[in-house]
Amino acid sequence: MSLIKNLLIWVHLLAMAGVFGGFLYGRLVFASADQSYQGVIHALLKITQFFIGLILISGFALFYFQVQNSFQAGISLGEIFKDGVTHVILTKLVLLIAVGAFSGIGSKKAREENYPAAEKMWLLALVSTSIAVFLGVMLRSI
Ligand code: HEM
Image 1 (cartoon, protein in one colour):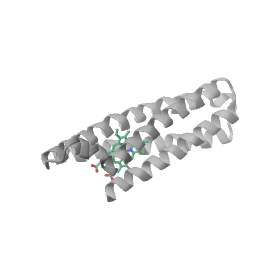
Image 2: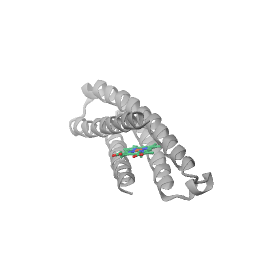
Image 3: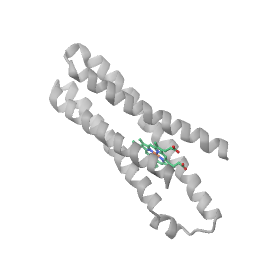
Image 4: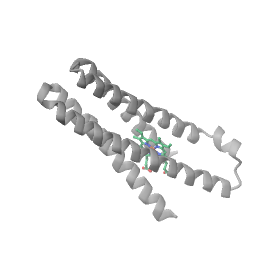
């Protein structure tokens, strides 16, 4: 069980680094964007979306383990949902959905060759990811 949990945390962190790195690299690409970069932007987007999916799956599994542990400790579902940790996790879920939306809209803008708008979207995605990382690390220390 603890091996599975460690593995899930590893996938979660690796996918997080993938999303963060992808958006960071995207920022560099945008700094010099012209039509020849379209391919790079789309490849980046595909990879980051794959990692977003991985974060979601591993995150849900980690949450499931936390809920199971709480049940075993005799904590009721109502108490689990009133807990601050659950709120942090739900906030992370909202942030992840926002990251997906920003990157999706960003890619559409890039396809329309509206690079300034695409760049803004990617910047928002990067900021949202940073906040989610911060909350994730906070979960560890609570
Ligand atoms: C952009 C989105 C996200 C990022 C960047 C992120 C990042 C992180 C980080 C850095 C940790 C700390 C890992 C550790 O050191 O133990 C963490 C833990 C955790 N994350 Fe996420 N996360 C994201 C989304 C999610 C989502 C959507 C869920 C659930 C639906 C989730 C559930 C969890 C849980 C339950 C833990 C605690 C693991 C433990 O038991 O220690 N995360 N996350």
